[in-house]
Amino acid sequence: MILLVLFLFLLSSQSAWSAEDEAEILIFSLSPAKVKEQQGILKIQISTFSPIQQVTVKGKPRNFPKGASLVWLKIPYMLKPGINVFEVYVKTKLGEAKKIIRKSMKLLNFLKKQNLVTPFS
Image 1 (cartoon, rainbow, N blue to C red):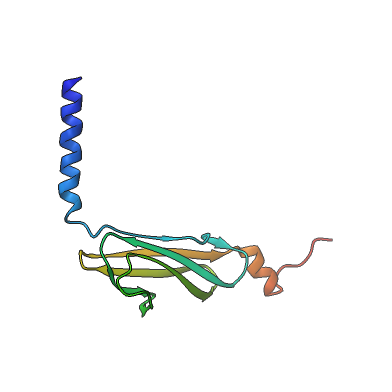
Image 2: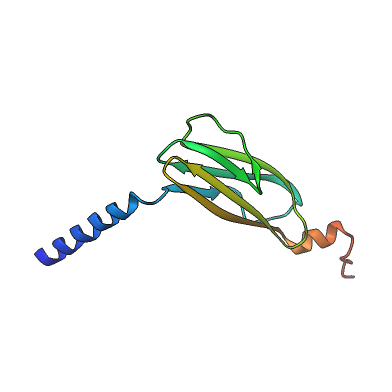
């Protein structure tokens, strides 16, 4: 039992040392990966331990409150057929992080909009 506690202590202290070197930036989408409509809004949440200095989505700088460590973004989009990629880049005083968010439109909805699906009779 004592060895288990000692092992867990060593594991947790080692992960705390490595955490100092990481950017500690969380980036995630609040929107579903597959959508029914071609046009919509991509909702992104960014959470950091230090103030955010820079945010870009698909290479375009995004506005956010100065000194913020928690940011919600709403990015309008028009999807193309297939998988659409949104690269999110965040820079803080402690580091930087990139995340790829993929979105696609359900194929049947796209085909219906293009009048490529005929109804079954």
